[in-house]
Image 1 (cartoon, rainbow, N blue to C red):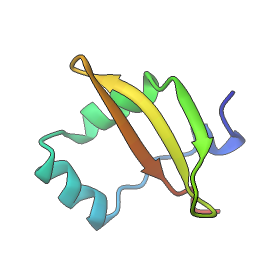
Image 2 (image 1 turned 180 degrees about the horizontal axis):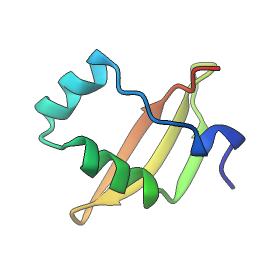
Image 3 (image 1 turned 180 degrees about the vertical axis):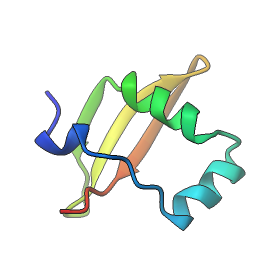
Image 4 (image 1 turned 30 degrees about the vertical axis):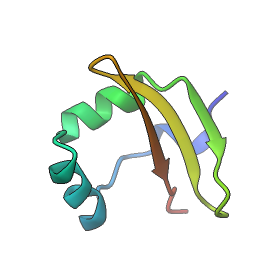
Length: 68
């Protein structure tokens, strides 16, 4: 089950944009990964969540931080 904020509009930070370049994926790739997410659990750091997904046959773990 995913939190209520799961369907909010996606906003990319400069930190994320740098990681996208470093790890060679685009915003479209990111949206596909989120669409295919299998798990969404609270992270150790309060206010953050870990998303588990797959993309191009590889497992990915992403940290997201909803902006309330």
